[in-house]
Image 1 (tube, rainbow, N blue to C red):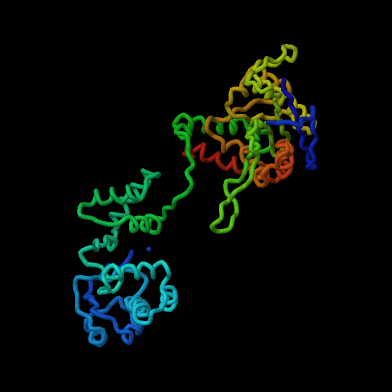
Image 2 (cartoon, rainbow, N blue to C red):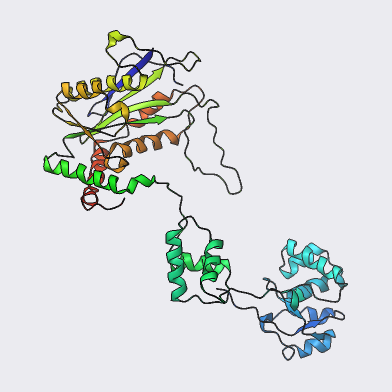
Length: 439
């Protein structure tokens, strides 16, 4: 047995529930320049307390005074590594600890060095026996930088073509293929990434998978024929069509994103039970959302399809039976609101094409009109479902709340203006279909 509840949405925004009630439902960096550095034999606090200059261009001639005071010995084999701290800062930090017995945290705060870096510098000072200022490393240990290469137009053309042909590629692959295509070119991934995103204007966006057949020759031809049929038969797509479709709702539906404080998880409580998917049929027209119909199965805990009584005149199979009931009730509602001789626009689902359904549509003076395959954008009700689902997802259901009631309330936000806008949006695709363009 199955229970069908039918909701009739009136122009006033109210709705009437027909049928039995149901309470249950289941930018590149600079090249590192190797400079002449100095090896410390001992530290003098007087000279280490000076922190006035930009050390990035230090040479022996620049610091001859400091050399005589510190007793520094020139060592061309060491290089100051590219950190955000200057040698003078680190030297003062070490001096405060070694000569004045400051605590590490106090010395770090005084010299503007972060605690994590301070511990690292202190450990390096101890490891090298206090003879080399932390931050200097042997020049031979430095790997040559590869990000000083300027990409030219030929590189740009190659990268643009490669990304266009491999939309799901990663920067590592693009860099490898670029260096492989241009012999002798060495460049790092970060430079390629900046070039692809800033120069070529690519961006990483959420993937939207498309079925290959969506833009096949047969599908494109079918869309063209569909639009030509509407034009040749002077069918008013906006005002003479009723758009029908089915959508599924789950009890634990929730928005995929939510607000949370930085560093805190974005947890949203939802019902433990996934429950039975609630299948909802709906139809809309230029005049608004007309009706929604829900099917609430009587579950006995066993997955078993029960045969419908022959007296009902319904074909076997719950889905097709439910849709046939929906068509009959929908036709009755259309008659009540004065929408006669309408085109009932549906997709190519099997339950939409049964002999009983087609006969029921024609018996009520309407004409079935089937959409071309893989063409959801030509069915405006798809956007209507998206609007209702967004509303349902806003507030997760409480433990004892009924999903059907949540859907009813969400459906009330769909206005006639919304429906007209959805239909106009679908209508704008007609020129693309006539010109046989990909979508």
